[in-house]
Length: 241
Image 1 (cartoon, rainbow, N blue to C red):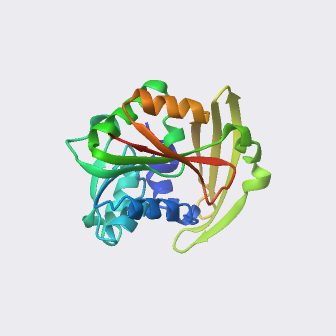
Image 2: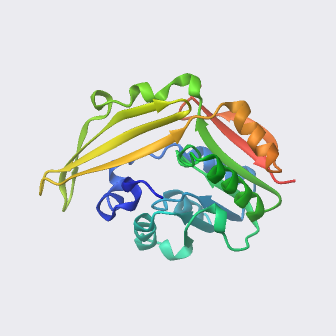
Protein backbone atom coordinates (compact mmCIF):
# COMPACT_ATOMS: atom_id res chain seq x y z
CA UNK A 1 0.00 0.00 0.00
CA UNK A 2 1.37 3.40 -0.98
CA UNK A 3 1.86 6.16 1.58
CA UNK A 4 -0.63 9.04 1.43
CA UNK A 5 1.99 11.51 0.18
CA UNK A 6 1.91 9.46 -3.04
CA UNK A 7 -1.61 8.00 -2.96
CA UNK A 8 -3.76 10.96 -1.86
CA UNK A 9 -4.78 12.90 -5.00
CA UNK A 10 -4.30 16.32 -3.40
CA UNK A 11 -0.81 15.46 -2.14
CA UNK A 12 0.26 13.57 -5.26
CA UNK A 13 -0.61 16.62 -7.37
CA UNK A 14 1.82 18.72 -5.31
CA UNK A 15 4.56 16.16 -4.74
CA UNK A 16 6.98 17.55 -7.32
CA UNK A 17 6.53 21.12 -6.08
CA UNK A 18 7.00 20.17 -2.42
CA UNK A 19 10.08 18.06 -3.18
CA UNK A 20 11.73 19.82 -6.14
CA UNK A 21 15.39 18.91 -5.56
CA UNK A 22 16.07 15.81 -7.67
CA UNK A 23 19.81 16.22 -8.09
CA UNK A 24 20.03 12.62 -6.84
CA UNK A 25 18.82 11.44 -10.26
CA UNK A 26 21.99 12.58 -12.04
CA UNK A 27 23.85 9.52 -10.71
CA UNK A 28 21.14 7.22 -12.08
CA UNK A 29 21.28 8.88 -15.47
CA UNK A 30 25.03 8.27 -15.55
CA UNK A 31 24.50 4.61 -14.68
CA UNK A 32 21.96 4.30 -17.50
CA UNK A 33 24.60 5.73 -19.84
CA UNK A 34 27.29 3.41 -18.49
CA UNK A 35 24.96 0.45 -18.97
CA UNK A 36 24.08 1.56 -22.50
CA UNK A 37 20.50 0.93 -21.46
CA UNK A 38 17.85 1.11 -24.16
CA UNK A 39 15.07 -0.40 -22.04
CA UNK A 40 14.59 0.51 -18.38
CA UNK A 41 12.20 -0.58 -15.64
CA UNK A 42 11.67 2.16 -13.04
CA UNK A 43 10.31 0.50 -9.89
CA UNK A 44 8.44 2.90 -7.63
CA UNK A 45 8.33 5.52 -10.36
CA UNK A 46 5.99 7.84 -8.43
CA UNK A 47 5.09 10.95 -10.41
CA UNK A 48 7.42 9.87 -13.21
CA UNK A 49 10.26 12.37 -12.89
CA UNK A 50 13.06 9.88 -13.58
CA UNK A 51 11.09 7.82 -16.10
CA UNK A 52 10.42 10.92 -18.18
CA UNK A 53 14.07 12.01 -18.00
CA UNK A 54 14.98 8.64 -19.48
CA UNK A 55 12.25 8.79 -22.10
CA UNK A 56 13.51 12.21 -23.13
CA UNK A 57 16.81 10.54 -23.99
CA UNK A 58 15.09 8.08 -26.31
CA UNK A 59 15.01 5.20 -23.84
CA UNK A 60 12.08 2.77 -23.74
CA UNK A 61 10.77 3.01 -20.16
CA UNK A 62 8.30 1.05 -18.06
CA UNK A 63 7.29 2.77 -14.81
CA UNK A 64 5.53 0.79 -12.08
CA UNK A 65 4.05 2.16 -8.87
CA UNK A 66 1.32 1.12 -6.40
CA UNK A 67 0.04 4.72 -6.03
CA UNK A 68 -2.58 5.35 -8.70
CA UNK A 69 -2.77 9.07 -7.90
CA UNK A 70 0.94 9.46 -8.59
CA UNK A 71 0.66 7.55 -11.86
CA UNK A 72 -2.16 9.85 -12.95
CA UNK A 73 0.12 12.83 -12.34
CA UNK A 74 2.86 11.12 -14.36
CA UNK A 75 0.55 10.30 -17.27
CA UNK A 76 -0.66 13.88 -17.46
CA UNK A 77 2.83 15.35 -17.83
CA UNK A 78 4.30 16.45 -21.12
CA UNK A 79 5.54 13.33 -22.95
CA UNK A 80 3.75 11.14 -20.39
CA UNK A 81 2.49 8.98 -23.26
CA UNK A 82 6.08 7.99 -24.07
CA UNK A 83 6.29 5.82 -20.93
CA UNK A 84 4.42 2.60 -20.26
CA UNK A 85 2.87 3.08 -16.82
CA UNK A 86 1.83 0.08 -14.71
CA UNK A 87 -0.26 0.32 -11.56
CA UNK A 88 1.20 -2.26 -9.20
CA UNK A 89 4.59 -3.41 -7.99
CA UNK A 90 7.52 -5.49 -9.17
CA UNK A 91 6.04 -8.74 -7.90
CA UNK A 92 3.39 -8.90 -10.64
CA UNK A 93 5.00 -7.54 -13.79
CA UNK A 94 4.20 -8.68 -17.32
CA UNK A 95 7.05 -10.36 -19.23
CA UNK A 96 9.87 -7.85 -19.79
CA UNK A 97 13.47 -7.95 -20.96
CA UNK A 98 15.07 -4.71 -19.80
CA UNK A 99 18.70 -3.62 -19.68
CA UNK A 100 18.38 -1.77 -16.38
CA UNK A 101 16.02 -1.77 -13.39
CA UNK A 102 16.09 1.16 -10.99
CA UNK A 103 14.76 2.06 -7.55
CA UNK A 104 15.58 5.71 -6.90
CA UNK A 105 15.39 7.75 -3.67
CA UNK A 106 13.59 5.95 -0.81
CA UNK A 107 12.00 3.21 -2.90
CA UNK A 108 14.19 0.30 -1.75
CA UNK A 109 13.91 1.26 1.91
CA UNK A 110 10.15 1.80 1.66
CA UNK A 111 9.77 -1.89 0.75
CA UNK A 112 10.08 -2.73 4.43
CA UNK A 113 8.46 -6.17 4.76
CA UNK A 114 10.95 -9.01 4.13
CA UNK A 115 8.56 -10.93 1.87
CA UNK A 116 7.84 -7.82 -0.22
CA UNK A 117 11.56 -7.07 -0.51
CA UNK A 118 12.31 -10.63 -1.60
CA UNK A 119 9.47 -10.48 -4.13
CA UNK A 120 10.71 -7.17 -5.51
CA UNK A 121 14.24 -8.47 -6.02
CA UNK A 122 12.85 -11.59 -7.68
CA UNK A 123 10.54 -9.58 -9.92
CA UNK A 124 13.34 -7.26 -11.01
CA UNK A 125 15.57 -10.26 -11.72
CA UNK A 126 12.90 -11.81 -13.94
CA UNK A 127 12.43 -8.52 -15.80
CA UNK A 128 16.14 -8.11 -16.57
CA UNK A 129 17.76 -9.62 -19.61
CA UNK A 130 20.84 -11.76 -18.92
CA UNK A 131 23.60 -9.26 -18.18
CA UNK A 132 21.08 -6.57 -17.21
CA UNK A 133 21.66 -4.50 -14.08
CA UNK A 134 19.71 -3.46 -11.02
CA UNK A 135 20.63 -0.21 -9.25
CA UNK A 136 19.20 1.30 -6.07
CA UNK A 137 20.26 3.20 -2.97
CA UNK A 138 19.81 2.78 0.78
CA UNK A 139 20.92 4.96 3.66
CA UNK A 140 23.75 3.68 5.83
CA UNK A 141 22.15 2.95 9.24
CA UNK A 142 25.31 4.23 10.93
CA UNK A 143 24.41 7.73 9.73
CA UNK A 144 21.22 7.72 11.85
CA UNK A 145 19.48 9.99 9.34
CA UNK A 146 16.23 9.85 11.30
CA UNK A 147 17.71 12.03 14.04
CA UNK A 148 17.26 15.02 11.71
CA UNK A 149 13.63 14.21 10.90
CA UNK A 150 12.15 16.88 13.13
CA UNK A 151 9.79 19.81 12.66
CA UNK A 152 12.64 22.16 13.55
CA UNK A 153 14.80 20.89 10.68
CA UNK A 154 12.05 20.43 8.10
CA UNK A 155 9.36 23.09 8.53
CA UNK A 156 8.75 25.21 5.46
CA UNK A 157 6.00 27.12 3.68
CA UNK A 158 5.66 26.56 -0.08
CA UNK A 159 3.59 29.07 -2.03
CA UNK A 160 1.99 27.29 -4.95
CA UNK A 161 0.12 29.08 -7.77
CA UNK A 162 -3.61 28.31 -7.75
CA UNK A 163 -3.22 26.46 -4.44
CA UNK A 164 -1.80 29.03 -2.06
CA UNK A 165 0.63 28.54 0.84
CA UNK A 166 1.19 24.99 2.05
CA UNK A 167 2.96 24.35 5.34
CA UNK A 168 4.83 21.06 5.63
CA UNK A 169 7.05 19.35 8.17
CA UNK A 170 8.20 15.90 9.25
CA UNK A 171 8.31 14.34 12.70
CA UNK A 172 9.80 11.07 13.89
CA UNK A 173 7.18 8.61 15.17
CA UNK A 174 9.09 5.48 16.15
CA UNK A 175 12.42 3.70 15.81
CA UNK A 176 12.05 -0.06 16.21
CA UNK A 177 15.23 -1.91 15.27
CA UNK A 178 15.82 -1.40 11.53
CA UNK A 179 12.35 0.11 11.04
CA UNK A 180 11.90 3.88 11.27
CA UNK A 181 8.44 5.44 11.08
CA UNK A 182 7.88 9.14 10.46
CA UNK A 183 4.95 11.42 9.67
CA UNK A 184 4.68 14.29 7.20
CA UNK A 185 2.06 16.93 7.94
CA UNK A 186 0.64 19.29 5.32
CA UNK A 187 -1.55 22.30 6.13
CA UNK A 188 -3.34 24.13 3.30
CA UNK A 189 -3.84 27.79 4.10
CA UNK A 190 -6.59 28.25 1.50
CA UNK A 191 -9.12 26.02 3.26
CA UNK A 192 -7.37 24.96 6.46
CA UNK A 193 -7.26 21.28 5.54
CA UNK A 194 -4.57 19.27 7.30
CA UNK A 195 -3.35 16.02 5.75
CA UNK A 196 -0.81 13.60 7.17
CA UNK A 197 1.23 10.82 5.61
CA UNK A 198 2.96 8.10 7.63
CA UNK A 199 5.93 6.21 6.18
CA UNK A 200 8.13 3.38 7.42
CA UNK A 201 11.61 2.75 6.05
CA UNK A 202 13.87 -0.25 6.70
CA UNK A 203 17.51 0.62 7.30
CA UNK A 204 19.49 -2.37 6.02
CA UNK A 205 23.18 -2.95 6.63
CA UNK A 206 25.39 -3.18 3.55
CA UNK A 207 26.18 -6.86 4.19
CA UNK A 208 22.49 -7.69 4.55
CA UNK A 209 21.66 -6.14 1.19
CA UNK A 210 24.55 -7.91 -0.53
CA UNK A 211 23.40 -11.24 0.90
CA UNK A 212 19.83 -10.60 -0.21
CA UNK A 213 20.99 -9.87 -3.75
CA UNK A 214 23.18 -12.96 -3.95
CA UNK A 215 20.35 -15.12 -2.57
CA UNK A 216 18.07 -13.87 -5.36
CA UNK A 217 20.58 -14.78 -8.10
CA UNK A 218 22.40 -11.48 -8.62
CA UNK A 219 26.10 -10.78 -8.88
CA UNK A 220 27.00 -7.70 -6.83
CA UNK A 221 29.19 -5.65 -9.15
CA UNK A 222 29.84 -2.60 -7.03
CA UNK A 223 28.71 -0.60 -4.02
CA UNK A 224 29.21 3.11 -4.59
CA UNK A 225 28.93 6.21 -2.44
CA UNK A 226 25.91 8.39 -3.20
CA UNK A 227 27.25 11.65 -4.71
CA UNK A 228 24.37 13.71 -3.28
CA UNK A 229 24.83 12.27 0.24
CA UNK A 230 28.53 11.33 0.47
CA UNK A 231 29.31 8.96 3.32
CA UNK A 232 25.62 8.50 4.16
CA UNK A 233 24.22 6.17 1.52
CA UNK A 234 25.10 3.03 -0.41
CA UNK A 235 24.36 2.73 -4.12
CA UNK A 236 24.17 -0.93 -5.13
CA UNK A 237 24.86 -2.13 -8.65
CA UNK A 238 23.97 -5.77 -9.24
CA UNK A 239 23.82 -7.85 -12.39
CA UNK A 240 21.71 -10.75 -13.57
CA UNK A 241 24.23 -13.34 -14.86
